[in-house]
Image (tube, rainbow over all chains, first blue to last red; front, side, top):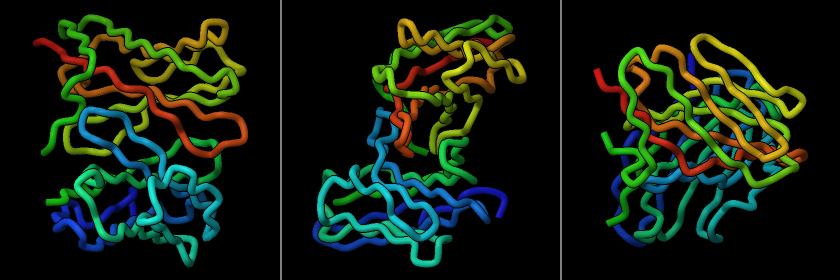
Length: 113
Length: 112
């Protein structure tokens, strides 16, 4: 596609529910990133993939967060047993090569009630 | 859509004026810097980047200046337009690390 696509656009989850957020990066992009953006703050790094390999997951806040990119294209961020503090916008970005400009999707707004 | 940057520092300029948005970065090992624009309800949009071997880079109506001595980055927007109103983030990338570290952002308001 023309840009990074994320779905769903909005997600409301009850506390304790599991959620799965999808990212379709720009076709052919090797690098894929997930970021979390709380209201009024800049995006914070969660995890990074180079093709299908998850090379950095140092930003994942707890073991309830899990990300995968099994075929090196589409990625899914899964949050288990959601908590209210997980409410945020989850942004996906991709780049053609490491350390080049990263293009962001519009994000998924997660609200945990 | 949701608001971005409810409590961010704000720069207000008149339409047609030049804008300068500043950013201090903390890590001297950072070697790649990007400015992003984020409108309400949207993801960050790439504006311009610069590598640490450069001091200045120009794009269309935008210029980024990098001062490595004081670890300072600035974004200059010429002839600011109402469509430039958004939150602007600087982001840095440390050598050997893939992830970007974002600053706290500045809201730019353009008055007609």
